[in-house]
Image (tube, one colour):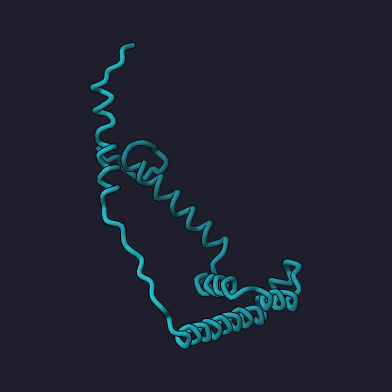
Length: 143
C-alpha cells in the first residue's frame, strides 16, 4: 500500500477551504448599555403578573372535575397537586401552562392507533402500486 500525497490533498482541500471560509465570516458584536431602574422594575412587575396568570390557569385546569377524576384514578390527591403547583417556579409553571394550551382536548391513544393504521395502510398501498408487494387484490402495478 503506497501513500499518495496528492490524493490526500484532494481529499482534505474542500473541508479545509470550508473551515477557512467559515472562520473568515463576520461575527456579530454584542451591544451593551445602561438600563434604567424603572424599566427593570416595570419588566419584573410584568413578569410577576404573567407568572401569576399562568399559575391561575394551571390551578383552573386542576380544578376541573374531569381532571380531578383522572388524578384520583392515578392515585394523586388533587389538593396535593394544587399545592405542588403553588411551589413550582414561574418558569416551570409557564412550561406547564404552555403544555396545557398545546395539547388538544380529547386526543389520546385512540388517535395514535388510528393514525398508525392509516400510515401502514398507505405504505402498503404504495408498495403494492409500485409492485414491491402484493397485499391488496384491488391494486394494479405501475408497470
